[in-house]
Length: 179
Image 1 (cartoon, one colour):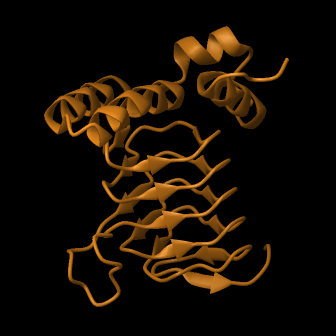
Image 2 (tube, helix red, strand yellow; image 1 turned 135 degrees about the vertical axis):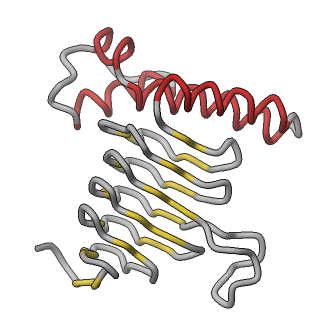
Image 3 (cartoon, helix red, strand yellow; image 1 turned 120 degrees about the vertical axis):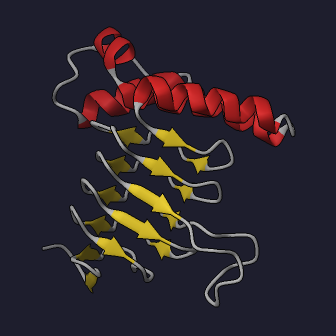
């Protein structure tokens, strides 16, 4: 059965990428990542409608219940899976593409506005499509992680990562192609 809604897509994506999920009902009732994305969509609509205080209140309650902090101004793609999401932090100007897999403790954090690399108004990373970010991966500043890239667990990414590359280490070293 095809997923006809964003929630349906999220449930199908989580079932596909998380072996712990047994069925849609199980995932819907127990996946903190699905809950965080659902509440983020509500908060993001309010944020875009300039109801920013209400959006922040919803985001705060979502963080309280899920352990996942997604700023209401962040842009989240379709079929994003946040697996074991406790401690995930996604900043206000972050953009996450479609079909990404994000593990626990990941930070998509910002740098101060006016840093020499900054795109006007952007402080957080742009994550491409089909990117995997390993547990405790940290991506900081207005950088770009290209499509199909992998950020290794416990890596600190401070520079752009090209499409299809692997970034590992502190600070991360970028390697073209898969490991």
